[in-house]
Image (cartoon, rainbow, N blue to C red):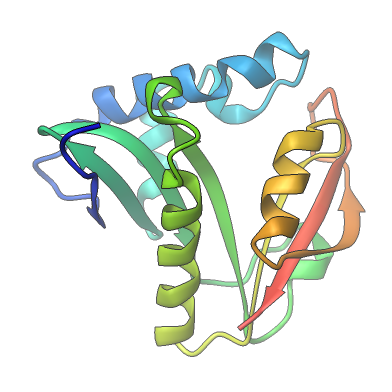
Length: 166
């Protein structure tokens, strides 16, 4: 890859259509495994809802969005584990299949972790299907630990909750 990705915050000039299409491409492998993650087929409106009030980061190459990750810097009602002071959540990590295995997912997650520290959080959590072994290996390789499980409404899988002390 000649041009290195630039990681930055999503801007008003960025296309939510392009971001949504990236999510669909990046989550296709999981959909093919039978996991109905929201990002596998979410609408543009759903993408807008998910980025609103959160901090969305994108990786851009040649003006094209090739990766993304979302920092949710507020308490969540569910999973119960995340409903504690000092805890934020990460979500919607996606890397275009064409840009996988280049360290981009790790760079995006490190960006989220660094931003959570800047905001004063003490711990960050996230979740993935307990059947997505490669993603669990990815997160634990970045120092995240499994701290629990949750069953999201209308999902075909049970999730492991992973966390990292900041």
